[in-house]
Amino acid sequence: MRVLSDVSLDVARGELVALLGSSGCGKTTLLRSIAGFVTPQSGRIRVAGRDISGLPPEKRGTAMMFQSYALWPHMSVAANIGYGLRMRGVARDAIAKRVDELLALMQMQGFASRSVAQLSGGQRQRVALARALAVDPALLLLDEPMSNLDYKVRIELRHELRALQKRIGITAVYVTHDREEALTLADRIAVLDAGRVVQYGSPEEIFHRPASAFVAGFMGADNAIELTRDGDGRLRSSRTNGGEPVVAHFRSDVARIDASSSASDADLQLHGQVVQTLYVGQGYRYRVHTDGADVWAHASHRIDEGAPVAVVVPRDALLLFPRASSAS
Amino acid sequence: MATLADDTVVEMRRSGDSRFVAFALLAPALLVVGLFFVVPLVLSAVGAFRSTEGAFTLAHFAKALDLYTRDLLFTIEIVVLSTLLIAAVAIAIAGYLTLGEHPRAVAILRWLYRWPLFIPFVVAGQIMRTFLAKNGMLNHVLIGSGLIAPISAQSMLDWRGIVVAFVWKQAPFVTLLLAGAMAALERQHIEAARNLGAPRWRVLVDIVLPQVRGTLLVGLVLSFVAMLSVLSVPLMINPNSPTMITVDVAYRINTFADYAVANALCLLSLLLAAFGAAFYLRHAVRKVEDA
Image (cartoon, rainbow over all chains, first blue to last red; front, top):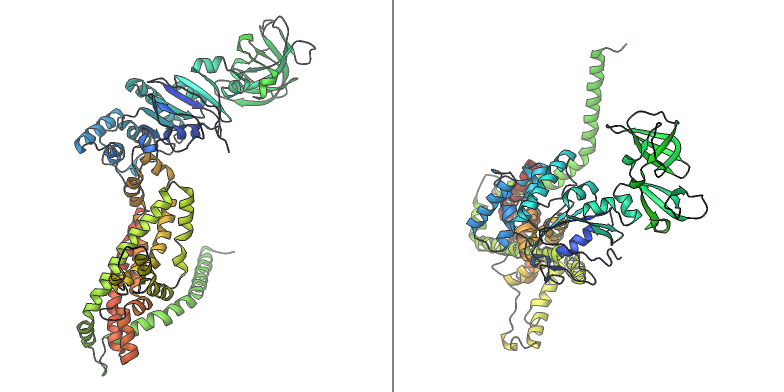
Protein backbone atom coordinates (compact mmCIF):
# COMPACT_ATOMS: atom_id res chain seq x y z
CA MET A 1 0.00 0.00 0.00
CA ARG A 2 1.37 3.43 -0.92
CA VAL A 3 1.23 5.73 2.12
CA LEU A 4 3.09 8.77 0.76
CA SER A 5 3.60 10.04 -2.75
CA ASP A 6 5.21 13.11 -4.34
CA VAL A 7 6.21 14.58 -1.00
CA SER A 8 8.70 17.42 -1.19
CA LEU A 9 9.55 19.54 1.84
CA ASP A 10 12.45 21.73 2.78
CA VAL A 11 13.11 22.76 6.36
CA ALA A 12 15.40 25.71 7.04
CA ARG A 13 18.02 25.56 9.79
CA GLY A 14 16.53 26.51 13.16
CA GLU A 15 12.99 26.20 11.87
CA LEU A 16 10.16 24.18 13.41
CA VAL A 17 7.91 22.63 10.78
CA ALA A 18 4.64 20.99 11.75
CA LEU A 19 3.25 18.08 9.73
CA LEU A 20 -0.49 18.49 10.22
CA GLY A 21 -3.16 16.08 9.11
CA SER A 22 -5.82 13.68 10.25
CA SER A 23 -5.17 10.07 11.31
CA GLY A 24 -3.83 7.90 8.49
CA CYS A 25 -2.75 10.79 6.25
CA GLY A 26 0.89 9.66 6.34
CA LYS A 27 2.42 12.28 8.65
CA THR A 28 3.95 9.75 11.08
CA THR A 29 5.18 7.63 8.15
CA LEU A 30 6.94 10.70 6.78
CA LEU A 31 8.60 11.33 10.15
CA ARG A 32 9.60 7.66 10.44
CA SER A 33 11.06 7.81 6.93
CA ILE A 34 13.27 10.71 8.02
CA ALA A 35 14.30 8.75 11.16
CA GLY A 36 15.08 5.66 9.05
CA PHE A 37 12.43 3.29 10.38
CA VAL A 38 10.58 3.25 7.05
CA THR A 39 12.42 2.95 3.74
CA PRO A 40 10.90 4.98 0.90
CA GLN A 41 10.64 3.22 -2.48
CA SER A 42 12.15 6.26 -4.18
CA GLY A 43 13.34 9.76 -3.42
CA ARG A 44 16.00 11.28 -1.22
CA ILE A 45 16.22 12.64 2.31
CA ARG A 46 19.00 15.13 2.97
CA VAL A 47 20.05 16.63 6.28
CA ALA A 48 22.51 19.54 6.15
CA GLY A 49 23.39 18.55 2.58
CA ARG A 50 24.15 14.92 3.51
CA ASP A 51 22.04 12.23 1.84
CA ILE A 52 20.83 9.98 4.66
CA SER A 53 18.32 7.95 2.60
CA GLY A 54 20.37 4.75 2.66
CA LEU A 55 21.64 4.99 6.24
CA PRO A 56 20.34 2.90 9.16
CA PRO A 57 18.54 4.85 11.93
CA GLU A 58 21.58 4.87 14.24
CA LYS A 59 23.73 6.64 11.66
CA ARG A 60 21.33 9.42 10.65
CA GLY A 61 22.14 11.92 13.38
CA THR A 62 18.46 12.63 14.01
CA ALA A 63 16.77 12.33 17.41
CA MET A 64 13.17 11.37 17.77
CA MET A 65 10.73 11.99 20.58
CA PHE A 66 8.03 9.34 20.52
CA GLN A 67 4.33 9.63 21.19
CA SER A 68 4.62 7.19 24.10
CA TYR A 69 7.98 8.81 25.10
CA ALA A 70 9.53 5.29 24.99
CA LEU A 71 11.57 5.88 28.15
CA TRP A 72 13.38 2.73 29.27
CA PRO A 73 11.83 1.65 32.56
CA HIS A 74 14.92 -0.24 33.79
CA MET A 75 17.07 2.90 33.64
CA SER A 76 17.13 6.03 35.79
CA VAL A 77 16.29 9.48 34.43
CA ALA A 78 20.02 10.27 34.05
CA ALA A 79 20.75 6.96 32.27
CA ASN A 80 17.88 7.58 29.86
CA ILE A 81 19.08 11.09 29.03
CA GLY A 82 22.74 10.10 28.76
CA TYR A 83 22.23 6.98 26.62
CA GLY A 84 22.77 8.67 23.27
CA LEU A 85 26.00 10.20 24.52
CA ARG A 86 27.17 6.80 25.80
CA MET A 87 26.61 5.43 22.29
CA ARG A 88 28.84 8.20 20.96
CA GLY A 89 31.65 7.22 23.31
CA VAL A 90 31.48 10.43 25.38
CA ALA A 91 33.37 10.27 28.68
CA ARG A 92 31.36 9.56 31.82
CA ASP A 93 32.09 12.97 33.42
CA ALA A 94 31.04 14.82 30.29
CA ILE A 95 27.81 12.81 30.14
CA ALA A 96 27.01 13.63 33.77
CA LYS A 97 27.66 17.34 33.08
CA ARG A 98 25.44 17.36 30.00
CA VAL A 99 22.66 15.48 31.84
CA ASP A 100 22.78 18.09 34.64
CA GLU A 101 22.57 20.90 32.06
CA LEU A 102 19.56 19.33 30.39
CA LEU A 103 17.80 18.63 33.70
CA ALA A 104 18.30 22.30 34.57
CA LEU A 105 16.95 23.31 31.16
CA MET A 106 13.89 21.13 31.79
CA GLN A 107 13.55 22.45 35.35
CA MET A 108 14.00 18.94 36.71
CA GLN A 109 17.06 19.33 38.92
CA GLY A 110 17.29 16.56 41.51
CA PHE A 111 15.54 13.99 39.35
CA ALA A 112 18.69 12.35 37.92
CA SER A 113 18.60 9.20 40.03
CA ARG A 114 14.83 8.75 39.95
CA SER A 115 13.25 5.82 38.15
CA VAL A 116 11.22 6.93 35.14
CA ALA A 117 8.31 4.89 36.52
CA GLN A 118 8.02 7.47 39.34
CA LEU A 119 7.46 10.43 36.99
CA SER A 120 4.24 12.17 35.98
CA GLY A 121 3.20 12.47 32.33
CA GLY A 122 4.61 15.99 32.01
CA GLN A 123 7.90 15.00 33.65
CA ARG A 124 8.24 12.00 31.35
CA GLN A 125 7.68 14.25 28.40
CA ARG A 126 10.47 16.55 29.59
CA VAL A 127 12.85 13.61 30.11
CA ALA A 128 12.05 12.28 26.62
CA LEU A 129 12.77 15.72 25.16
CA ALA A 130 15.99 16.02 27.17
CA ARG A 131 17.08 12.57 25.92
CA ALA A 132 16.52 13.65 22.33
CA LEU A 133 18.28 17.00 22.83
CA ALA A 134 21.26 15.48 24.67
CA VAL A 135 22.92 14.28 21.46
CA ASP A 136 22.63 17.74 19.92
CA PRO A 137 20.89 16.33 16.82
CA ALA A 138 20.99 17.90 13.39
CA LEU A 139 17.24 17.37 13.27
CA LEU A 140 14.77 16.83 16.10
CA LEU A 141 11.75 14.72 15.21
CA LEU A 142 8.67 14.93 17.42
CA ASP A 143 5.83 12.45 16.95
CA GLU A 144 2.68 13.84 18.61
CA PRO A 145 4.55 14.32 21.88
CA MET A 146 1.66 16.09 23.62
CA SER A 147 -1.16 13.73 22.73
CA ASN A 148 -1.00 11.74 25.98
CA LEU A 149 -1.13 14.76 28.27
CA ASP A 150 -3.96 16.54 30.07
CA TYR A 151 -5.20 19.70 28.37
CA LYS A 152 -3.71 22.05 31.00
CA VAL A 153 -0.28 20.39 31.00
CA ARG A 154 -0.36 20.29 27.21
CA ILE A 155 -0.90 24.04 26.95
CA GLU A 156 1.91 24.77 29.43
CA LEU A 157 4.36 22.43 27.73
CA ARG A 158 3.46 23.75 24.30
CA HIS A 159 4.59 27.23 25.33
CA GLU A 160 7.70 25.87 27.03
CA LEU A 161 8.63 23.80 23.99
CA ARG A 162 8.26 26.75 21.64
CA ALA A 163 10.38 28.99 23.90
CA LEU A 164 13.00 26.28 24.25
CA GLN A 165 13.17 25.60 20.53
CA LYS A 166 13.63 29.31 19.83
CA ARG A 167 16.27 29.61 22.54
CA ILE A 168 18.45 26.70 21.41
CA GLY A 169 17.66 27.23 17.73
CA ILE A 170 17.22 23.57 16.92
CA THR A 171 15.72 22.41 13.61
CA ALA A 172 12.62 20.31 14.25
CA VAL A 173 9.81 18.47 12.51
CA TYR A 174 6.70 18.10 14.63
CA VAL A 175 3.85 15.72 13.81
CA THR A 176 0.41 16.62 15.10
CA HIS A 177 -3.26 16.33 14.25
CA ASP A 178 -4.09 19.33 16.46
CA ARG A 179 -4.32 22.51 14.38
CA GLU A 180 -4.08 24.79 17.42
CA GLU A 181 -0.83 23.06 18.39
CA ALA A 182 0.53 23.43 14.86
CA LEU A 183 -0.44 27.12 14.70
CA THR A 184 1.09 27.87 18.10
CA LEU A 185 4.37 26.01 17.64
CA ALA A 186 5.35 26.03 14.02
CA ASP A 187 7.26 28.44 11.83
CA ARG A 188 5.76 26.64 8.87
CA ILE A 189 3.00 24.06 8.54
CA ALA A 190 2.72 21.28 5.97
CA VAL A 191 -0.87 20.05 5.71
CA LEU A 192 -1.06 16.45 4.56
CA ASP A 193 -3.99 14.65 3.04
CA ALA A 194 -3.96 11.08 1.74
CA GLY A 195 -0.16 10.95 1.59
CA ARG A 196 0.35 14.27 -0.19
CA VAL A 197 1.37 17.71 1.02
CA VAL A 198 -1.65 19.80 0.05
CA GLN A 199 -0.30 23.10 1.39
CA TYR A 200 2.98 24.26 2.88
CA GLY A 201 3.30 27.71 4.32
CA SER A 202 3.35 29.94 7.38
CA PRO A 203 0.62 29.46 10.03
CA GLU A 204 -1.00 32.78 8.99
CA GLU A 205 -1.02 31.76 5.35
CA ILE A 206 -2.50 28.34 6.07
CA PHE A 207 -5.12 29.81 8.38
CA HIS A 208 -6.21 32.81 6.35
CA ARG A 209 -5.49 31.67 2.81
CA PRO A 210 -6.07 27.92 2.67
CA ALA A 211 -5.24 26.53 -0.75
CA SER A 212 -8.17 24.15 -0.93
CA ALA A 213 -11.54 23.41 0.62
CA PHE A 214 -9.88 20.49 2.48
CA VAL A 215 -7.31 22.77 4.14
CA ALA A 216 -10.02 25.34 4.93
CA GLY A 217 -12.14 22.63 6.57
CA PHE A 218 -9.15 21.25 8.48
CA MET A 219 -8.23 24.70 9.79
CA GLY A 220 -11.68 25.21 11.26
CA ALA A 221 -13.65 26.73 8.39
CA ASP A 222 -15.88 23.70 8.40
CA ASN A 223 -19.10 25.43 7.41
CA ALA A 224 -19.53 24.89 3.67
CA ILE A 225 -22.28 26.21 1.49
CA GLU A 226 -22.68 26.04 -2.27
CA LEU A 227 -23.16 29.40 -3.99
CA THR A 228 -22.92 31.09 -7.38
CA ARG A 229 -20.58 34.03 -8.04
CA ASP A 230 -21.66 36.68 -10.52
CA GLY A 231 -19.32 38.40 -12.90
CA ASP A 232 -19.20 41.40 -10.53
CA GLY A 233 -18.24 39.18 -7.58
CA ARG A 234 -21.64 39.14 -5.87
CA LEU A 235 -22.66 35.87 -4.27
CA ARG A 236 -26.06 34.37 -4.89
CA SER A 237 -27.93 31.19 -4.09
CA SER A 238 -26.61 28.13 -5.90
CA ARG A 239 -29.96 27.77 -7.62
CA THR A 240 -29.46 31.04 -9.50
CA ASN A 241 -28.82 30.49 -13.20
CA GLY A 242 -25.51 31.63 -14.66
CA GLY A 243 -22.35 32.65 -12.83
CA GLU A 244 -19.52 30.55 -11.47
CA PRO A 245 -20.44 27.69 -9.09
CA VAL A 246 -18.39 28.02 -5.87
CA VAL A 247 -18.34 26.56 -2.41
CA ALA A 248 -17.95 29.06 0.45
CA HIS A 249 -16.22 27.95 3.68
CA PHE A 250 -16.35 29.95 6.88
CA ARG A 251 -15.64 29.48 10.58
CA SER A 252 -18.56 29.32 12.94
CA ASP A 253 -17.08 32.06 15.16
CA VAL A 254 -17.34 34.62 12.34
CA ALA A 255 -20.94 33.71 11.55
CA ARG A 256 -23.25 35.70 13.84
CA ILE A 257 -26.91 35.38 14.53
CA ASP A 258 -28.32 38.84 14.98
CA ALA A 259 -31.93 39.97 14.52
CA SER A 260 -30.90 43.61 14.26
CA SER A 261 -28.18 42.76 11.83
CA SER A 262 -26.40 45.56 10.10
CA ALA A 263 -25.29 43.35 7.28
CA SER A 264 -24.05 45.01 4.15
CA ASP A 265 -25.13 43.83 0.75
CA ALA A 266 -21.78 42.17 0.26
CA ASP A 267 -22.13 40.00 3.38
CA LEU A 268 -23.60 36.54 3.08
CA GLN A 269 -27.02 36.22 4.69
CA LEU A 270 -28.55 32.83 5.30
CA HIS A 271 -32.05 32.34 6.65
CA GLY A 272 -32.99 29.24 8.55
CA GLN A 273 -34.13 27.65 11.78
CA VAL A 274 -32.16 26.75 14.93
CA VAL A 275 -32.05 22.95 15.21
CA GLN A 276 -29.40 22.45 17.90
CA THR A 277 -27.99 24.55 20.74
CA LEU A 278 -24.64 24.09 22.49
CA TYR A 279 -23.43 26.24 25.39
CA VAL A 280 -19.70 26.90 24.93
CA GLY A 281 -18.97 29.18 27.87
CA GLN A 282 -18.40 32.45 26.02
CA GLY A 283 -21.80 32.20 24.36
CA TYR A 284 -23.84 29.71 22.41
CA ARG A 285 -23.13 27.69 19.33
CA TYR A 286 -26.11 26.97 17.10
CA ARG A 287 -26.70 24.56 14.27
CA VAL A 288 -28.93 26.38 11.83
CA HIS A 289 -30.83 24.52 9.15
CA THR A 290 -30.77 26.76 6.07
CA ASP A 291 -31.99 26.22 2.59
CA GLY A 292 -28.56 25.21 1.28
CA ALA A 293 -27.02 23.31 4.19
CA ASP A 294 -26.77 23.11 7.97
CA VAL A 295 -24.29 25.69 9.28
CA TRP A 296 -22.85 26.43 12.72
CA ALA A 297 -22.98 29.99 14.04
CA HIS A 298 -22.31 31.83 17.31
CA ALA A 299 -24.47 34.17 19.36
CA SER A 300 -23.98 35.70 22.77
CA HIS A 301 -27.59 35.13 23.83
CA ARG A 302 -29.88 32.14 24.09
CA ILE A 303 -32.25 31.36 21.23
CA ASP A 304 -34.91 28.68 21.45
CA GLU A 305 -34.62 25.67 19.17
CA GLY A 306 -37.04 25.99 16.26
CA ALA A 307 -36.78 29.82 16.17
CA PRO A 308 -36.29 31.38 12.72
CA VAL A 309 -32.94 33.25 12.50
CA ALA A 310 -30.67 35.02 10.03
CA VAL A 311 -26.99 34.04 9.93
CA VAL A 312 -24.68 36.79 8.71
CA VAL A 313 -21.15 36.05 7.48
CA PRO A 314 -18.91 39.02 6.61
CA ARG A 315 -17.77 38.90 3.00
CA ASP A 316 -14.08 39.00 3.90
CA ALA A 317 -14.48 35.97 6.18
CA LEU A 318 -15.68 33.81 3.30
CA LEU A 319 -13.16 31.42 1.71
CA LEU A 320 -14.30 30.68 -1.82
CA PHE A 321 -13.23 27.67 -3.84
CA PRO A 322 -14.34 26.44 -7.26
CA ARG A 323 -17.04 23.87 -6.60
CA ALA A 324 -15.24 21.04 -8.42
CA SER A 325 -12.26 21.33 -6.04
CA SER A 326 -14.38 21.07 -2.92
CA ALA A 327 -13.93 17.32 -2.83
CA SER A 328 -10.12 17.58 -2.83
CA MET B 1 -39.87 -10.51 59.12
CA ALA B 2 -36.17 -11.33 58.90
CA THR B 3 -33.97 -9.81 61.57
CA LEU B 4 -30.31 -8.87 61.40
CA ALA B 5 -29.41 -12.06 63.32
CA ASP B 6 -31.34 -14.19 60.81
CA ASP B 7 -29.50 -12.52 57.94
CA THR B 8 -26.17 -13.21 59.59
CA VAL B 9 -27.02 -16.90 60.04
CA VAL B 10 -28.08 -17.19 56.38
CA GLU B 11 -24.89 -15.42 55.32
CA MET B 12 -22.75 -17.77 57.41
CA ARG B 13 -24.54 -20.81 56.04
CA ARG B 14 -24.00 -19.56 52.50
CA SER B 15 -20.32 -18.95 53.14
CA GLY B 16 -20.06 -22.46 54.67
CA ASP B 17 -21.77 -23.93 51.56
CA SER B 18 -19.44 -22.13 49.17
CA ARG B 19 -16.42 -23.30 51.17
CA PHE B 20 -17.65 -26.90 50.87
CA VAL B 21 -18.17 -26.52 47.10
CA ALA B 22 -14.68 -25.05 46.71
CA PHE B 23 -13.18 -27.93 48.68
CA ALA B 24 -15.18 -30.50 46.67
CA LEU B 25 -13.87 -28.98 43.45
CA LEU B 26 -10.27 -29.03 44.68
CA ALA B 27 -10.39 -32.49 46.28
CA PRO B 28 -9.69 -34.61 43.15
CA ALA B 29 -6.66 -32.50 42.27
CA LEU B 30 -5.39 -32.61 45.86
CA LEU B 31 -5.91 -36.37 45.96
CA VAL B 32 -3.96 -36.95 42.75
CA VAL B 33 -1.10 -34.70 43.87
CA GLY B 34 -1.08 -36.32 47.33
CA LEU B 35 -1.24 -39.96 46.19
CA PHE B 36 0.98 -39.82 43.14
CA PHE B 37 3.48 -37.13 44.08
CA VAL B 38 3.71 -36.24 47.77
CA VAL B 39 3.41 -39.75 49.22
CA PRO B 40 6.02 -41.36 46.89
CA LEU B 41 8.33 -38.38 47.46
CA VAL B 42 8.03 -38.64 51.23
CA LEU B 43 8.48 -42.44 51.11
CA SER B 44 11.53 -42.02 48.90
CA ALA B 45 12.99 -39.38 51.24
CA VAL B 46 12.26 -41.55 54.29
CA GLY B 47 13.81 -44.56 52.52
CA ALA B 48 17.04 -42.60 52.04
CA PHE B 49 17.43 -42.24 55.80
CA ARG B 50 16.28 -45.73 56.89
CA SER B 51 18.44 -48.79 57.44
CA THR B 52 17.23 -52.31 56.63
CA GLU B 53 16.28 -52.58 60.33
CA GLY B 54 14.21 -49.44 60.08
CA ALA B 55 16.55 -47.20 62.12
CA PHE B 56 17.66 -43.70 61.11
CA THR B 57 20.95 -43.70 59.21
CA LEU B 58 23.13 -41.55 56.98
CA ALA B 59 24.95 -44.58 55.63
CA HIS B 60 23.16 -44.49 52.28
CA PHE B 61 24.28 -40.91 51.73
CA ALA B 62 27.82 -41.82 52.75
CA LYS B 63 27.80 -44.68 50.24
CA ALA B 64 26.23 -42.53 47.54
CA LEU B 65 28.84 -39.81 48.04
CA ASP B 66 31.64 -42.36 48.26
CA LEU B 67 30.67 -43.99 44.97
CA TYR B 68 29.21 -41.13 43.02
CA THR B 69 30.77 -37.78 44.09
CA ARG B 70 32.55 -37.62 40.74
CA ASP B 71 29.26 -38.23 38.93
CA LEU B 72 27.55 -35.57 41.04
CA LEU B 73 30.20 -33.02 40.04
CA PHE B 74 30.03 -34.25 36.44
CA THR B 75 26.23 -33.73 36.52
CA ILE B 76 26.59 -30.21 37.92
CA GLU B 77 29.24 -29.31 35.32
CA ILE B 78 27.17 -30.69 32.44
CA VAL B 79 23.95 -29.01 33.54
CA VAL B 80 25.53 -25.65 34.38
CA LEU B 81 27.51 -25.57 31.12
CA SER B 82 24.40 -26.57 29.14
CA THR B 83 22.34 -23.88 30.88
CA LEU B 84 24.89 -21.21 29.98
CA LEU B 85 25.05 -22.37 26.36
CA ILE B 86 21.24 -22.53 26.19
CA ALA B 87 21.12 -18.93 27.42
CA ALA B 88 23.59 -17.84 24.74
CA VAL B 89 21.76 -19.68 21.94
CA ALA B 90 18.30 -18.53 23.08
CA ILE B 91 19.43 -14.89 23.37
CA ALA B 92 21.01 -15.04 19.92
CA ILE B 93 17.94 -16.58 18.24
CA ALA B 94 15.30 -14.55 20.10
CA GLY B 95 17.41 -11.41 19.59
CA TYR B 96 17.56 -11.99 15.85
CA LEU B 97 13.84 -12.74 15.71
CA THR B 98 13.17 -9.42 17.46
CA LEU B 99 15.80 -7.20 15.85
CA GLY B 100 16.51 -8.94 12.52
CA GLU B 101 15.96 -6.81 9.46
CA HIS B 102 15.59 -9.46 6.77
CA PRO B 103 11.97 -10.64 6.94
CA ARG B 104 12.63 -13.85 5.02
CA ALA B 105 15.56 -14.87 7.24
CA VAL B 106 13.47 -14.10 10.34
CA ALA B 107 10.53 -16.14 9.00
CA ILE B 108 12.75 -19.15 8.18
CA LEU B 109 14.47 -19.02 11.57
CA ARG B 110 11.09 -18.71 13.34
CA TRP B 111 9.89 -21.81 11.50
CA LEU B 112 13.07 -23.83 12.06
CA TYR B 113 14.02 -23.20 15.67
CA ARG B 114 10.94 -24.82 17.19
CA TRP B 115 11.43 -28.27 15.66
CA PRO B 116 13.46 -29.80 18.53
CA LEU B 117 10.59 -28.88 20.90
CA PHE B 118 8.52 -31.69 19.39
CA ILE B 119 11.27 -34.31 19.57
CA PRO B 120 11.51 -36.45 22.75
CA PHE B 121 14.81 -36.60 24.65
CA VAL B 122 15.29 -40.26 23.72
CA VAL B 123 15.04 -39.42 20.01
CA ALA B 124 17.37 -36.44 20.53
CA GLY B 125 19.86 -38.86 22.11
CA GLN B 126 19.58 -41.23 19.16
CA ILE B 127 20.03 -38.36 16.66
CA MET B 128 23.18 -37.23 18.47
CA ARG B 129 24.56 -40.81 18.41
CA THR B 130 24.35 -40.91 14.63
CA PHE B 131 25.55 -37.33 14.32
CA LEU B 132 28.48 -37.24 16.75
CA ALA B 133 29.87 -40.79 16.56
CA LYS B 134 33.36 -41.40 15.16
CA ASN B 135 31.84 -42.52 11.87
CA GLY B 136 28.90 -40.12 12.29
CA MET B 137 27.61 -37.42 10.02
CA LEU B 138 29.61 -34.58 11.61
CA ASN B 139 32.94 -36.29 10.98
CA HIS B 140 31.85 -37.28 7.45
CA VAL B 141 31.12 -33.65 6.69
CA LEU B 142 34.36 -32.41 8.29
CA ILE B 143 36.46 -35.03 6.44
CA GLY B 144 34.55 -34.50 3.17
CA SER B 145 35.14 -30.76 3.30
CA GLY B 146 38.86 -31.31 4.03
CA LEU B 147 38.74 -29.60 7.42
CA ILE B 148 40.14 -32.65 9.25
CA ALA B 149 42.12 -35.71 8.19
CA PRO B 150 40.28 -39.07 8.46
CA ILE B 151 42.79 -40.21 11.08
CA SER B 152 42.01 -37.33 13.40
CA ALA B 153 38.27 -38.01 13.41
CA GLN B 154 37.15 -38.66 16.97
CA SER B 155 33.94 -39.61 18.67
CA MET B 156 32.15 -36.86 20.56
CA LEU B 157 29.94 -39.33 22.39
CA ASP B 158 31.13 -38.19 25.83
CA TRP B 159 30.32 -35.11 27.93
CA ARG B 160 30.34 -33.01 24.77
CA GLY B 161 27.63 -35.16 23.22
CA ILE B 162 25.39 -34.77 26.29
CA VAL B 163 25.87 -31.00 26.28
CA VAL B 164 25.12 -30.75 22.55
CA ALA B 165 21.97 -32.88 22.98
CA PHE B 166 20.75 -30.82 25.94
CA VAL B 167 21.38 -27.50 24.23
CA TRP B 168 19.79 -28.71 20.99
CA LYS B 169 16.70 -29.92 22.87
CA GLN B 170 16.25 -27.15 25.47
CA ALA B 171 17.41 -23.96 23.68
CA PRO B 172 14.20 -23.81 21.58
CA PHE B 173 12.08 -23.95 24.74
CA VAL B 174 13.91 -20.99 26.32
CA THR B 175 13.92 -19.20 22.95
CA LEU B 176 10.15 -19.64 22.71
CA LEU B 177 9.63 -17.97 26.10
CA LEU B 178 12.24 -15.29 25.43
CA ALA B 179 11.06 -14.40 21.93
CA GLY B 180 7.50 -14.07 23.27
CA ALA B 181 8.65 -11.69 26.01
CA MET B 182 10.75 -9.69 23.54
CA ALA B 183 7.84 -9.42 21.11
CA ALA B 184 5.69 -8.04 23.94
CA LEU B 185 8.12 -5.14 24.51
CA GLU B 186 7.03 -1.77 23.25
CA ARG B 187 8.58 -1.45 19.78
CA GLN B 188 9.33 2.22 20.36
CA HIS B 189 11.78 1.28 23.16
CA ILE B 190 13.92 -0.41 20.52
CA GLU B 191 13.46 2.35 17.97
CA ALA B 192 14.36 5.03 20.53
CA ALA B 193 17.69 3.33 21.21
CA ARG B 194 18.53 2.88 17.53
CA ASN B 195 17.54 6.46 16.89
CA LEU B 196 20.06 7.59 19.50
CA GLY B 197 22.86 5.71 17.78
CA ALA B 198 22.78 2.20 19.27
CA PRO B 199 23.66 -0.63 16.87
CA ARG B 200 21.42 -3.69 17.12
CA TRP B 201 23.68 -5.69 19.42
CA ARG B 202 23.74 -2.77 21.88
CA VAL B 203 19.95 -2.52 21.71
CA LEU B 204 19.80 -6.23 22.59
CA VAL B 205 22.21 -5.89 25.52
CA ASP B 206 21.15 -2.49 26.88
CA ILE B 207 17.43 -2.27 26.18
CA VAL B 208 15.86 -5.63 25.36
CA LEU B 209 17.61 -8.12 27.67
CA PRO B 210 17.28 -6.12 30.90
CA GLN B 211 13.54 -5.93 30.32
CA VAL B 212 13.12 -9.69 29.69
CA ARG B 213 15.71 -11.04 32.14
CA GLY B 214 12.92 -12.40 34.39
CA THR B 215 11.54 -14.55 31.57
CA LEU B 216 15.06 -15.69 30.63
CA LEU B 217 15.73 -16.70 34.23
CA VAL B 218 12.48 -18.66 34.48
CA GLY B 219 13.21 -20.48 31.19
CA LEU B 220 16.74 -21.34 32.29
CA VAL B 221 15.62 -22.58 35.72
CA LEU B 222 12.98 -24.81 34.15
CA SER B 223 15.56 -26.16 31.68
CA PHE B 224 18.12 -26.68 34.47
CA VAL B 225 15.64 -28.80 36.44
CA ALA B 226 14.49 -30.68 33.31
CA MET B 227 18.08 -31.56 32.34
CA LEU B 228 18.84 -32.85 35.84
CA SER B 229 16.12 -35.44 35.42
CA VAL B 230 16.92 -36.72 31.93
CA LEU B 231 18.02 -40.38 31.84
CA SER B 232 17.84 -41.28 28.16
CA VAL B 233 20.43 -38.83 26.83
CA PRO B 234 23.36 -39.72 29.16
CA LEU B 235 22.40 -43.39 28.95
CA MET B 236 22.58 -43.37 25.16
CA ILE B 237 25.54 -41.02 24.68
CA ASN B 238 27.80 -41.53 27.67
CA PRO B 239 26.77 -44.34 30.05
CA ASN B 240 30.34 -44.93 31.33
CA SER B 241 31.86 -43.26 34.36
CA PRO B 242 31.82 -40.36 34.90
CA THR B 243 28.18 -40.12 33.96
CA MET B 244 25.09 -38.34 35.19
CA ILE B 245 23.27 -39.11 38.44
CA THR B 246 20.15 -40.32 36.64
CA VAL B 247 22.17 -43.18 35.10
CA ASP B 248 23.51 -44.08 38.54
CA VAL B 249 20.02 -44.14 40.05
CA ALA B 250 18.79 -46.45 37.28
CA TYR B 251 21.87 -48.63 37.74
CA ARG B 252 21.39 -48.96 41.56
CA ILE B 253 17.79 -49.99 41.09
CA ASN B 254 18.02 -52.23 38.02
CA THR B 255 21.26 -54.01 38.88
CA PHE B 256 21.28 -54.12 42.68
CA ALA B 257 17.67 -53.32 43.63
CA ASP B 258 19.42 -50.86 45.96
CA TYR B 259 16.54 -48.46 46.56
CA ALA B 260 18.11 -46.87 49.61
CA VAL B 261 21.20 -45.50 47.79
CA ALA B 262 19.02 -44.65 44.79
CA ASN B 263 16.77 -42.65 47.13
CA ALA B 264 19.79 -40.87 48.59
CA LEU B 265 20.99 -39.95 45.07
CA CYS B 266 17.49 -38.74 44.20
CA LEU B 267 17.47 -36.50 47.26
CA LEU B 268 20.83 -35.05 46.27
CA SER B 269 19.40 -34.34 42.81
CA LEU B 270 16.42 -32.73 44.46
CA LEU B 271 18.82 -30.53 46.43
CA LEU B 272 20.40 -29.35 43.17
CA ALA B 273 16.97 -28.67 41.68
CA ALA B 274 16.07 -26.74 44.84
CA PHE B 275 18.79 -24.19 43.95
CA GLY B 276 16.95 -23.60 40.70
CA ALA B 277 13.60 -23.45 42.48
CA ALA B 278 15.01 -20.89 44.93
CA PHE B 279 16.03 -18.63 42.02
CA TYR B 280 12.61 -19.09 40.45
CA LEU B 281 10.74 -18.30 43.67
CA ARG B 282 12.92 -15.27 44.42
CA HIS B 283 12.12 -13.89 41.00
CA ALA B 284 8.40 -14.69 41.33
CA VAL B 285 8.25 -12.94 44.73
CA ARG B 286 10.07 -9.88 43.34
CA LYS B 287 7.62 -9.75 40.44
CA VAL B 288 4.64 -9.81 42.83
CA GLU B 289 6.28 -7.06 44.92
CA ASP B 290 6.90 -4.94 41.79
CA ALA B 291 3.28 -5.37 40.73
